[in-house]
Length: 139
Image 1 (tube, rainbow, N blue to C red):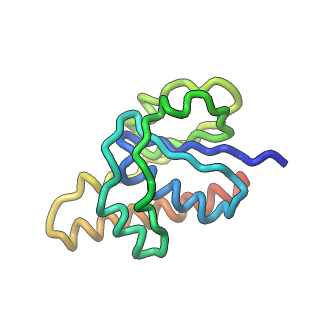
Image 2 (cartoon, helix red, strand yellow):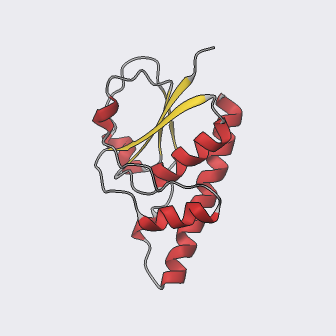
């Protein structure tokens, strides 16, 4: 059976898509090749790294990639994790099934350091549940 290819797309490939990539890899356990990208590249958000480490997943080696870097890959699924990315998502020729969920952007969080950390954790929990369900339904 051919391994499924999944692309997670957000605006800057710094937080939400990085978290989703890590959780999809974790839950898919080798049943899919997971990529993440942005319609822009903002670099990996340090709070995203810290927040994922709290849940046992190390994303510090991830890179912030532009969606056009993956233009030649025939994806089975393209998941947009913010409305902005869905609106600006390039067309992917072929069979890619599109899924969308607009997660709150923790990089825009404000307040004390603890309040910001809580917003990252809340988004992480939403993404983790979504990814677990996605893998159960599609893989």
